[in-house]
Image 1 (spheres, helix red, strand yellow):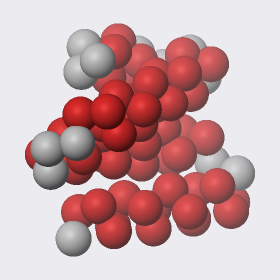
Image 2: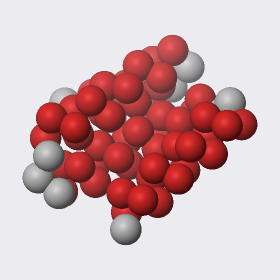
Image 3: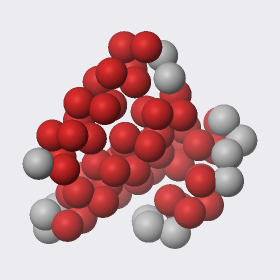
Length: 68
């Protein structure tokens, strides 16, 4: 259920062009995939979140980077 929630949130964020919410959705997807036992997918999403947060100059980049 969390996976679907974060996928939906990401789709909406992309549609409206909200990069901060895209980053949050990627971080959520990373946590969900890690919980589901898929570390490779988790890493992909965490990396995308870090990239977006860093581009936006947000401190969350460091928090998510710690998940990598």
